[in-house]
Amino acid sequence: MVQLTPPPARVLVAETEPSRRRELARALLQVGQEVLTAESAEAALALARSERVEVALVSASLLQAPGGLLEGLHRLTTPPEVIAVGLASDAAPMVARGAWGWLERGPSLAEQAAT
Image (cartoon, rainbow, N blue to C red; front, side, top):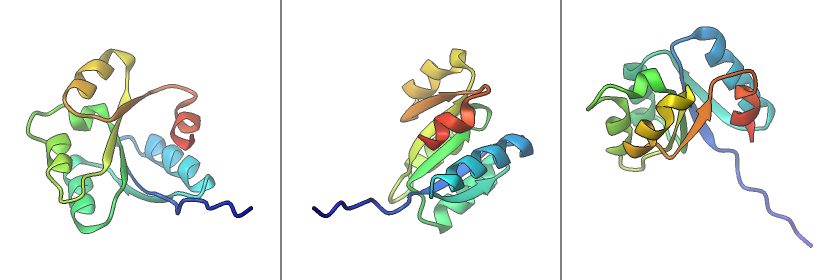
């Protein structure tokens, strides 16, 4: 029996905190994903416009501005699945605004991102 595996996804990690950005990128690379990183909403949107991105893991702080990054990502020709990263209390509003899912900040964040 032949088992086909999907190609790695190209994941954009947008996080203002450098250590969190590196931790998420490292976890995703370890499970075979392609990773792009951005430190701001502007940089994330520029990367998503110029590169094929299937998934965007984005800090909730970068998604919260109305008319900002979340809406910009949704307007792309091929929008990525946006997964917000932050506190549980911010989850419902982000999902209501169009985030595909949510990862809670904490010790298991890199593990959550890699699964």
